[in-house]
Image 1 (cartoon, rainbow, N blue to C red):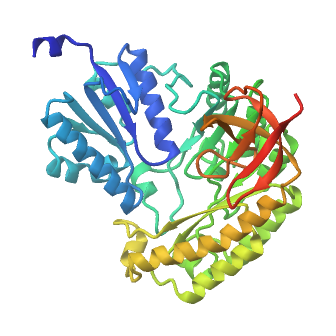
Image 2 (cartoon, one colour):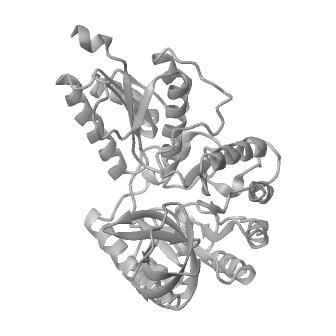
Image 3 (cartoon, rainbow, N blue to C red):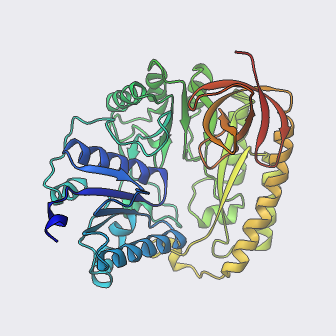
Length: 437
C-alpha cells in the first residue's frame, strides 16, 4: 500500500454524450495538465488511479449508458483498481442528489458549471489565461469549438436548459484567440458548436452576431475549414448564409435540426415554426447557395404522433431532399413540458417509425451520392483503415456524416487535403481516386 500512495496520480477522463461534453472534458484536462497533474482521455493502458466520468443526461439511452459507466467504475474502485472516482456533466447536474443517495461510492458529483470545484479536489487552480489550451481528444487536424453555453429556447421535449442553463455567449475576441491557438497546434478545421448557434451574441452584443463572428474566424490564417452545427430554424438570420457564401474557408454546410414536419407536431414540440416556413427557409438558403449541404435531425414517436404525421414527415423529406438526416426516438423526460403529455407510443413502434423514415432518406442519400460520380472534391484525410485512407469533403462532418474512401498508390498524411475524383457511390459513402498533386 505504501508504494501505491507514493505513486504519482494519473487521471483518466471518460466522456459520454455530445461534442459539447467533449470540449468540456478537453478544457478540464488542459487545466489539470497546467497544474502538473498527469491526465489522459479514455486511457487504454489502464495505468491511471483516478477517473472522472463526464456524463450525458439528454435522453433515456444516454442516461442508462452514464449510469452503467459509473457502476462499472464503482466496481473497479471496490476491487482496488482505481483510488478515486468523480462524476460530472449533465446527468450529475440534473440528478445530483439522487445519485449521491443511490451511488454513494462515488467520491464527489459535480454539475456542468463546476469546473473550479473539480480542480479544488486536486488542489489545482483555475487558470483563466488558458484559452484554447486543452488536451484534444480528437485527431490534431480538427477540433470542436464551443461559442456559447446554455439555451433560451423552450422546446417541449428538451431538458438541455435544465442541465446547461440560459444562453451565454463567449466574446468574439476569446473565440478568435482560441482558434488561433488551435491552428498553431495543427488544427485545420473547427466545428462551431452551441446548443443554439443563431442566438449567438444576443446576450452580450444585443443582436445576433454569428455572421460577424464567422467573418472574424475566416480571417484566421491557416484555418482552412469552418463548419456550423446546431442552428435553430425559427427567425433564422439569412446573413449567416451570406457569410458562408462570401468566405471560401467556411464550409458549404449547415446543421439545422428541424425535429419534425407536421404542424401538429411542431406546435406540440413548441418549435415556433411551421412546415411552410421551414420549406420557405430551405428554399431561401438554397437560392443563395444551391450546392450547400443541409443536415437535419428528426424525432420519431413524440406523444400524439399519428400515422398521418409520419407520412407527412416522409413526404417532406422527399420534397426537401436533405443531404444528411439523423433521427432520434422520443424520450419522455422529467421537468420538460412534454412530460405532461401521455407517452402513448411503444418503444418498438418508435423504432419502427424511425427506421421507416430513414429508409426514405437512404434512397435520397444514394441518389445525391450518385450525382457526385465524376466530380472532384477537396477531401481532408482523417485516418487510415485496412490499408485505405478515409476522409471527408466539406459536405461532411465528423462521425455523423458520409466518408470518402480514398484510393491512392502514394503515401498520404493524416490531416492533409487532397483532391479526389469520385468513382463510386454508396448509400452513405463515396469512393474515389486522388488526382493532381
